[in-house]
Image 1 (cartoon, each protein chain N blue to C red):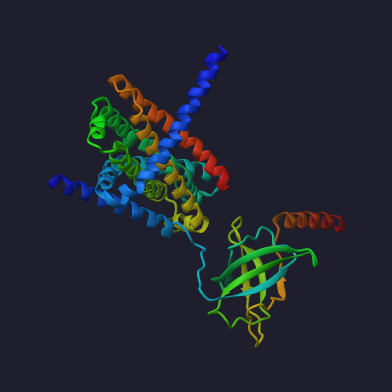
Image 2: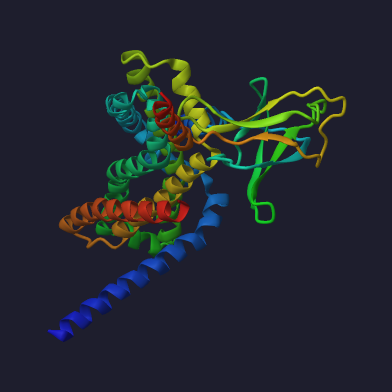
Length: 157
Length: 254
């Protein structure tokens, strides 16, 4: 009887430890940019170039994550990228002339959307499109431009 | 000579088929044991899981520490030491956790299972059970099989967790990576799907390791030498099967 008790105790401790470890792995190591809100609304925006923007990337305003990206698709008619944001419906007072730009976290980090508030009295709601967008800064283009400017600058002198 | 090749192939196919049928019979008997004789399963979880916890924890700590050291010294070349946590977390949770746990499990618990069952067979205990109208398959093999399956995911999770703390110990405490950057980068780059992949792998490896162990024990030649060979074969075949399935699962998931 004593032995059975020890076995049961050991097994119980082991299972508890294992489940605890699983719980730790699922909650503590994942979901840093996880955004979970039950009530959301969707806002599409068109970009000339989205760079390497991906699904589930955060949408932030004043540095705070208020939503995430649902889809990134190419629109063959307008030859632009259509990005759909999902925004927490708590934030229903974002001016509809706010502009969206694609920024990079750190020098080589992942890309995210930053919303800059506008001054309009009407607010973004489900389906309303963000009119002002700024494309991703592609590092190669930037370097190319810099080199090109330097060359033409040298000729001027 | 062709005849020999023919019979070798035929024998291989027969063994392979018998193995499948054996697996199906284990599965067939599993529900009744799981619900009616749960005490037997608990005892096997204790044998296979609880008694393996120390080796798993110690190995996890060292593997995590090595990942911390290697990750740091290599990432430092790109000034990306802060990513050492991400590096260790990905390696541990998706690959090393399930794989090394399965290999250790085969060495620690699989050999014990195979030799125990083999010795039961050699000393006619299994035949004695049959004489008493007790099916040794459901009374002896199924609880050991289920115990292994239950233990493996838990052991792998413990291994990964301890490994992360090992990496933390080396990376943060020893080499001076920022604590916040370490954990925050892990959280940002890891998805629930990554953890899930690790759990799926450890469940599959658990099925493989315990199935192969009970199979080898049950089919051991009932002599001292036969039991020894069955034990060796368990480790060898489990290692091959685990690494093969690891490759397959990774290829499917990616």
